[in-house]
Length: 105
Length: 118
Image (cartoon, rainbow over the protein chains, first blue to last red):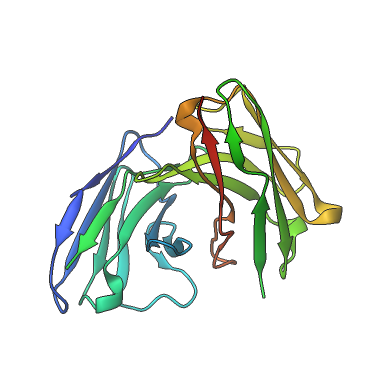
């Protein structure tokens, strides 16, 4: 099974700042990687698919990059509603999730 | 409006069985692969199982393979998860989900809680 490792576990930033979240795969997943945002009590929301494509309705401040084993989710200028948990997910060999990054104020 | 409504969770003893159901509406269920994802209390998301649109292809996480079985009934727009030989570590909220891609934003149910305890 492909293991995804996210870093950092917790990221403390302020509104307006830039957030950079990382995800590393134990083997190449090509571009088959997605990112989700998850707030407690709500359903996870797909942000990015195929490593760099924004899902429907996702603001342009969210961007994804990477290929193979190293991936990045960037939020260019944080807004109050962006503080949440973020998970990467590989879709190359069935599925698996990273352990998550908590983005806190 | 898209709805995925899970049911069938509850308290079960280690070694026991449960069958989860998910009733889908508001989208073309029969053309989408579907999944079960779980989240243990205080933990992250964990993929459990996937079934393709016609039910012929299935996949499982190593932690549940051989114990859980996913199935679907497209005529009734329903997804199922038969869980046998349950363990304490299977305790979690179980979500029915279409994970989303270029053609779908993704859909999730509200989850059903499975508690495995003696």
